[in-house]
Length: 282
Length: 325
Image (tube, rainbow over all chains, first blue to last red; front, side):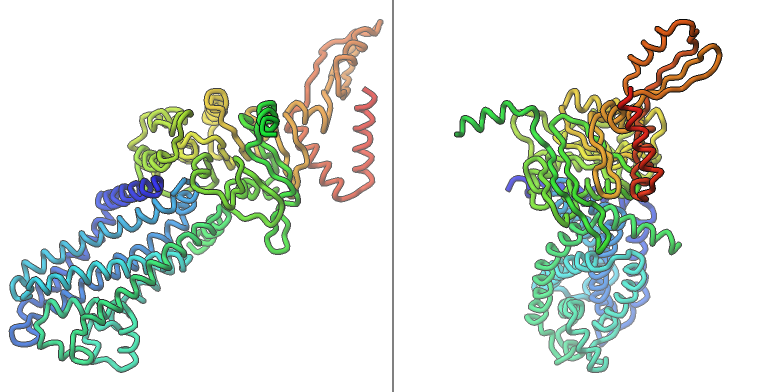
């Protein structure tokens, strides 16, 4: 009982140390910075545009941007970190330490949450400045935003662990993963409304958690009349929370099993083999 | 009954920290370990010596609980490594080959992070994990706590690996090729460290190396692993005496150089000097190094495997020479 609690504390410290190092590393800090600047520029360029009379286009963009940030940092980002750290021996090192895997997983989660909250926090500040009262957020809307972000973070962070466990090669996650996230964003109605896409992409989109996260956020940022642009012409909030929660539960069950399985399979020989392969490719 | 058990426990010369019987490992059809028996007693330094591909790394990965064996029995600190818990893990220090992790971390911070994982497992009695500054000093990285792991040289990186293996003050320290990338000074310091660990902390140490001089210098006992089997087991002196067996005696007799090989050179030299009418000069007695023993052993094994008649006669010639002396 005492050891796991202590490992979680060590993991949280580990996560903040990793995040602090990232902020002090120019290439990684600029990765966060550039993303936020792009958001600011997009919102600025759309500042005069209206989706409907009195409804800024920026509100739709904001919901999509937050959802994409969620999938980029939690799913794609965490997945890449784990695949990379499997290759460089970090996971095997964790395995050689008592409660090391638990501390490692807690650390990776903490680092991801810190990065996500920083990114989303900055985005919301920028949105508040540029869009301000036109978002028309009341307390109920705010509760939906915060609630969906929390459930969404759990769902996508655990998916990040699953991605990190399933893929072997950091370079393939980097390249194909990037494309996959782009395609997923499109299928999930984050680029244009899903209701305007063909039936088969609606089917794909509604199977992913992204569509539902985006939907819930739009329900908060947009006036109720715009629900008619959505599939079945409603916000379907209870269903949105149910689907994303289901993903979160699946992730919470799968992630610890997979990460332990992957760590168990790490050996010096496996790490050597991947390094050899990586060197030959260059 | 229980009294008897207690007594036998006390009278045991030294508890076994590692015990393996008939250890087997197969990858597909390739047999890597073919029935290894291995004992490491408390406080001992044991070197696992062998050419590349002999199965050294596989053996210690099984002992560390990183790899499931195909067959046989292994007990480490009283438990089966594949089914041991975190408290067991806290009693073992691991230094594996080829780490490239945590490149961005300052080394002091990294050691503090890992050290904290051992704290819940501290038991009354023995001192707990090492202090980070003390540890950096022990491995020769004093004052470098703020250096990033990535900025270290290969040898410094290896010292850090050793420090990480040690941080929990393990009862058993397992090292795979620990001195790779060390210059002679670093190597010497590492050997000093091993001695210090066994003298002051009674750490049991199992290490692999293909550096024979190193095994000779640090190990109480050397196991030579070849082709998935232990082909020799003993102290450096025992191995030199029993396996290849001989000291080399050279001298000049009335100006002519003579060479003789003998298992126990004292008697031979006594007889040599007692002979009248012979002026013996430049007398030298040199015992074989483990290196020569080892090379002879590997060569003989290869010859035996080839099964050639010449190899057999060479072996029997050596045996008869030993018996003659």
